[in-house]
Each structure stands twice: as structure tokens, then as C-alpha cells.
Image 1 (cartoon, protein in one colour):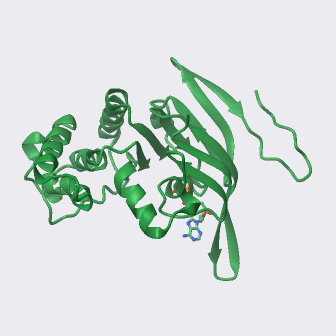
Image 2 (tube, helix red, strand yellow):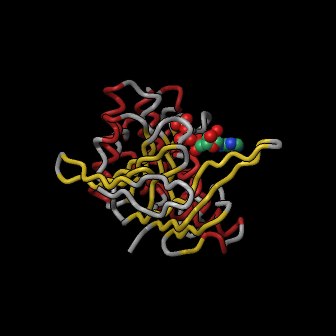
Image 3 (cartoon, protein in one colour):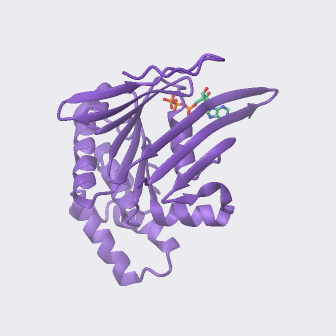
Length: 251
Ligand SMILES: Nc1ncnc2c1ncn2[C@@H]1O[C@H](COP(=O)(O)OP(=O)(O)OP(=O)(O)O)[C@@H](O)[C@H]1O
């Protein structure tokens, strides 16, 4: 079973008269509970891929299944609902609402789910602020928190809906090294403890080393897929195929 299945996905962007091919023939199955890094240089397609998995954007062609649901068959409202209930987002710039306290930021996505009572909302806010170690800062606004604390609030906010997947676009890029490592360790502890699938983009090898699955991208192609056993990566290289060549270059 896969929590995300991507089949022969292409993504083009129109830029005036030009077409930018951001993703080429991406096929990938992501198992539930993994801690997956998508790595690659700037412009390789990491954010585009995360946006497609997060139902923020649609592929130009190909199929994406999230929790076994074909997202191409869903209306904009249905996609918004799937996002609100199943996918938590963490951004490199934290994206907290500045006028709300830490607790209110965590509660915010729950307001979209009317079946969650006010009592349950408060319970979840307390629980997830506790998990990220910020119970004492519940009433602080983002500008009264450090960068690392802001990202912890963002993690609690992403978890509050109890998502099956958390997507994180360069979650440590705006943090110093030590804080970035703490945030990654926290994400991994949560991944182990709550079994939530984490998919995050990065071009930092230190960040990659925290993952247990790896997708390497270049120029819109997947160039390798890796599984980590203890400290060693078992990498299967996938060479982008030149026209007319149908050979794989698996190692
Ligand atoms: N909205 C857009 N319109 C046009 N082109 C885009 C758009 N978004 C991304 N692209 C292009 O698609 C390609 C992939 O971009 P993407 O942002 O997915 O890469 P990335 O690996 O996340 O890069 P970075 O590490 O710099 O964030 C790039 O060539 C980029 O210029």
C-alpha cells in the first residue's frame, strides 16, 4: 500500500510564449510512515513535486493518488477538503499568521473542520504544542518567538489536523545549523512516534542524512531513489533516458 502514488507525471509551466518543463515522467510510490527527502539542486523540480503531492497544483499529464484517491477526478472544493483533512504543510518561511498567538496558529486549520468541537480543538492545541515543546509559549505571537520556535509552531499546526502526510519545503533553510538539526530531529521523533509520513525537500546533505528514503532530482527528472539501512544508503540510479533508449541503469 502507498500513501502517495505518482504515475508518469509531467508538469509544464507556461511563461509567456515559453513552456518550462518542470517535471518529466515522474513515477514514484511512497509508503506510509516514511521520512522521505527529495533532494536536488535549485530548479530541479522539488517544490513542483511537493505542490502536486499537496494538491496545490495539478499535473499537466499523468496520475497522482493520495490515500488511494485519484486527485485528477476531484473538484477544487474536494481538493481543498482533502488538503485540509489529510495533508499538513511546513514552509521554509514558517508562514504563521502574525496577529495570532502560537496556540491560535495551531488551532487555525482546525476551524475548517466543523466536526471538531471547541473542546477537542483546545485539547489538540495543548497536545501538539506540548509535543513540540512550546506549551509555555502558547500565548506568544510569532514575533515574540525565535526562528526555531516559529518552525515548531508550524510543525504543531501541520500536525493538528492529524494528517496522513506532512509536506515540508526546505524546512530548515531559514534556520541556523544547530536549530535546523533540532527541528529535523523533532520531525523525525514525531514521524516515529505518530507514524505520520514526512516528505521534505532539501539540498543539504546533512538534512538528507536524517531521512530513511531519498528521491534525487535533476532537471525535472528523478535520477536516483534510495533506501537507508542504518548509516548506508542503498541507491538505485535512474538515468534520464535519451530518445529511443529504453534501458535502465539500475545499480
Ligand atoms: N510558477 C512557475 N512558472 C514558471 N516556471 C516555474 C514556476 N514554478 C517553477 N518553475 C520552473 O520550474 C522548474 C522547477 O522549479 P522548482 O521550484 O520546482 O524547483 P526546486 O527544485 O524546488 O528549486 P529551489 O530549490 O530553488 O526551490 C524551474 O525551472 C523553475 O524555474
